[in-house]
Amino acid sequence: MSGSAVTVETTALNPSSRDEPRIVSDSSGQSASRGATVVVDPDGEVGRAFATAVGAVELADDFSGPIERAVVFLPRSPSVHATQLIDRCVAMVERNPGCCVCLVSSFRIHLGDQTLQLIEDETRATFESVTGRTVVLRAGNIVATDGQLSSGFARLAQFRWLIPSSVTSVFLNRDELFAAIDAATSDSGEIRSESSGRTLTVLGSNRPLRDVLAEFGSTGGFTTVVSSIAWLLSCLQIDRVIAGLFAVAGWIAPASLRRWRLTTLEPASVSELLTLVNPLNQQHVALAGYNTGVVHFGWKYPGKTVVRTTSSGRLVRVRDQVVNVDAGVLLKRLIGELRERDRELFVVPNYSYISAGTTFMVPVHGSGSEVSTLGDTIERTLIYDPQTDRLRLIRRGDEDFGRLMYNSASGVLVLRLQLRIRERSRYFVQRSELQSPSAADIWQAFADPEASNIELRKSKATDSSVEVSRYFTTPSDDQATMEVPRDSIGRLWDRLEENPVSSWLFHAFVRKCGFHVELFLNETEFEVFWRAHATLPLSKIQLRLVKADGLSNSPFGDCDRISADTFMKRKNSAAFLKFMQENLPDARFNPGKHSM
Image (cartoon, rainbow, N blue to C red; front, side, top):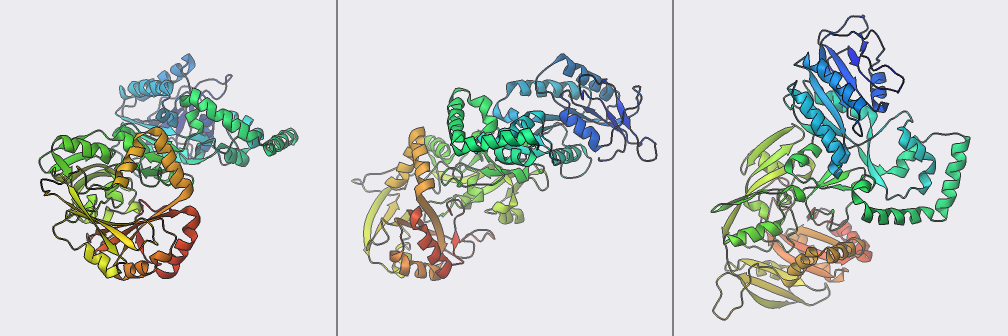
């Protein structure tokens, strides 16, 4: 344990034990000068393991030496017994004002468990009244590495074959929890020493309960018989029946069952978001705006819990030429609020159910001729960097801005952005067709200096004609105008998203039946693609020009490229992938749309 070889433990390990202080001395038998650690666990199981990990032995009950750290495992429900134990710990901490307090709470607070939230709030307030150093750790379901589970899990192990594979949750290794406690209460390490008052969540791996029980279940004759019967019943699809009953129960009592159907968390504020994104939890979560593959394509993140940022966005502050916006705000809302103030974004994508923060992490573009992507309009951004455990404001032109933008491997969390905006325009469109155009003809079609937006579309790869849409902002009197320069398909996508039923059907279709890839091709690569595209099983091709931005991690950082946004039936994807591997193995693509 960090910084101390002396541990004082106050526990309720079992009903018959005395709730008296325990002390551990170092190997020389002398107390360490930095003080001891107090451990309180009214429920007992994890506290017992923690005591064993630090080698606690019961000694005299009159310990009054210095205390460096107090670790309090919060009870699952309020009780007089728990209150008494915590009050005794508070009295010990009060005699040691510099003592650091770590409250070990539960991830279930993120699922709306009001009882646990009340216990956490009240306990925290009590300790903060006597010490200035308090941190809260919200842990996942705690499991051990020595074949041991909590008593509740152990009873389920023999029935694991009857537990549906859809019953998933977060499981935190006990040793990882103890290391997290150490890091959160240490004066150095991953967590800043001045981070008093913080709440840090450590979820653990997201896994099916059935798999966890298979690893940690006990053995024995009776257990083997019961497990065998459960396996035979699962062969009769009884587990599927249970899964159906579980789904029905989820409609009746969704809050209480969310713990066991946990794949995604949607923090309701930036502060809650920051509890989930921290150095101790980074390996267990995958950050997502609304449409970074999680919803649209059903991307899988093995072992990780998806943390969706869209519910945490609040602020939209419009000034003359810029807008400051929380990263979680959907572009749909941002576009609407700008419209009310006679302003607009330089680029509007076809699909606007995307969080503003996503524009920093993946290319989000429309068909603009002056500005290609919304990323081009970002002037500055507030980020949280888990590697340094710091909030940072970075500006366009900074070295870190160029290094982090479009760098999904960086792990940074975007919290707020400032984007350039302009006065609102009205648009009209001129449509024409190109018959059997060459690759050079396609490039030439984008060289119109008067058009504000240009896009080309082929309904099917085998069609001979390419539809060209040029949008202008200076209409004649007899021209019908539109508010946003995008086609009917783009408007349809947003309409589908507005209704929960159509949204579910839309995403289910794309996940199960569709295959969607957006390529960014230079002139040489586009020549290869265009020469062969009619032989590929493509249902749709939409073409736009994306200008070079000079960013090191940008798929078009080095030169202008044509965006070839393709869609096909999933059953036809193998032929497309074979063509790409053989002819364009180094082609760049949009990670926000890549459904492979």
